[in-house]
Image (tube, rainbow over the protein chains, first blue to last red):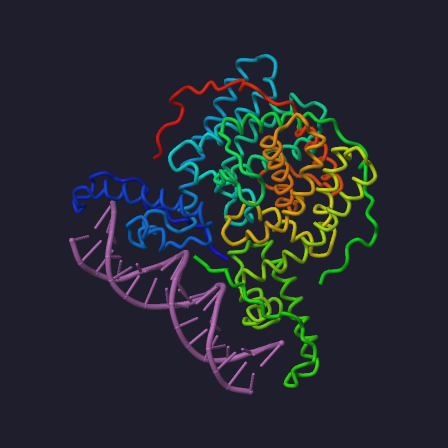
Length: 252
Length: 252
DNA sequence: GTCTATACGCGGATAGAC
DNA sequence: GTCTATCCGCGTATAGAC
């Protein structure tokens, strides 16, 4: 129902010192406010979710005025996009650069599957060790599960990553056709997303027993799991669908 | 910031015909309203997300009054829980029953890994073929990514499933310790959740090339992938962390 | 250029009439 | 059981102070 066609670009640049009416130090204060809003929103969005976090709470916690969000970013949505890009762009740049180094190192053969997966997975998991990153990874985990209307722009950030990694993976997985590879990569991304979304529960409460695992250890396990899954032989017949015809009754 | 400690249980039972002030046919109308609210909310939540779907839109589309939601369910949150339980309880009952049949059939050995995974995965994917189920599976996919505050009650629905499946899986995976098994099952659940969340995009737009896959085909692929991943040998050393020390600059 | 104050319409929730 | 009226907090927009 919203209209994001003209997303409002207010801070086209801190056009430093051109305007004689500007207060001394105004630019620095503006940058500090912007920063505080990004950091605070990142933490609160991760803890309570996007919808449950109001701009009033964010601005109060960041010692800023309610309207500061709209001045610096244009809308709540745009604030989210900004804090998201801030973290994701370096990660995706690392992924692509490291992949290209891998390709160069193993040329003319394609690089080993495990190495490619490692480069895909580790930079994102490593965010957990950056200040504030532990909040951010939960947001990433949730992104792919969100309904598609308003966050498509963010998902497009991953398009370059996908387009560069897919052919390299395909070269090591000749037993899969295009559709099978796409499906299995969807499994792999889901594994990563789920781990990211649950990363904050170091003493995991409901779903799985508590365990204390470093991001490095998680990356190791995920790479081993995904590589084996991607290499799995194509399955032919479902082994078991006993399905007594009426073991589901109609809805209440 | 919400308080869901006392969730309001209004419709303790359609206490049929006890109240002399009730209109004739009131009970049937009430049940029909309840049903319409569940079906409509399920569709709208799946299409636009929970937060972006207002009670006013739901009640308008279901030809009901705004206050009907609070009368029948107590709150928007409780409406979500109700429509969720309606679908998930039969699925989880199927899973447990089929697992017990598998155990009995292969006793005294543990049942084959692929069969156990098939029984875990297929009933949920099969919901796509039920009327309205194609909407519901998207909600399931999102559940595990949601922040933990208000939906813990729903996640507990899966506790019985987990406690019954984990030991059977462990019996087939003696090379994994408890922590490794928990982590790899988290990967597996993530794979399933991601597929469910994207299930509606039969012509997948941003993330993966379009493909038309039946739920049965997806279940086959997921079982093959997860079985291989779970069986993967434990990895020892990360193969590649070239990580030029400064390939990440500080945040903007 | 940055921030404050204030206003509008819509969201979920609730009380009480019918 | 159902509905109307109402409450308060939300995202958003804008006018004007510094």
